[in-house]
Length: 179
Image 1 (cartoon, helix red, strand yellow):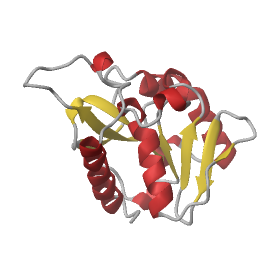
Image 2: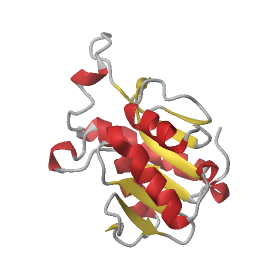
Image 3: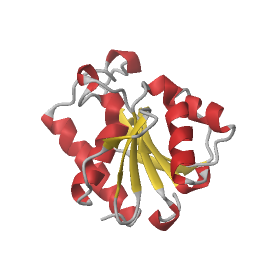
Image 4: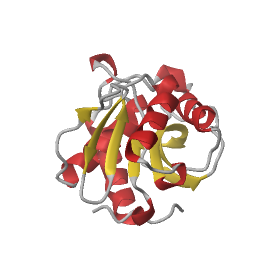
């Protein structure tokens, strides 16, 4: 279980920028930021001066979306931490996890990347894994067959799956004291 929201100064949602990736499983982190922005009454996200992330300041937390592609998230995260003078142990990084079933999630602190390239990029840039993560389940095995992540993470999310994401986002936000 992650620390309370009072220790999160920034929530960073990982994803890929651009229309081609909108509303895809791989953009679960972006979707969580969008959910928080709408539920917290956040002003519209704006591009940073460095142009490597978008952000919005709410009363309780800063919401960040790297404007870089997933595999280069570390540079944007480092830039955001410097810009807002925040320590890495005060952030929550939200991202898709193809090892967790759709509708599930895990909150963790100080874990390795487990093969997630966006998280690996952050760990490499920060030189440490001393940050919290919200791992959002995206796996929906068809007919009991385990699909390879590459075969579905870039696909668009349907209505049923979208409802599952919103349920996770609502639950996690309550746990983190954000709603």
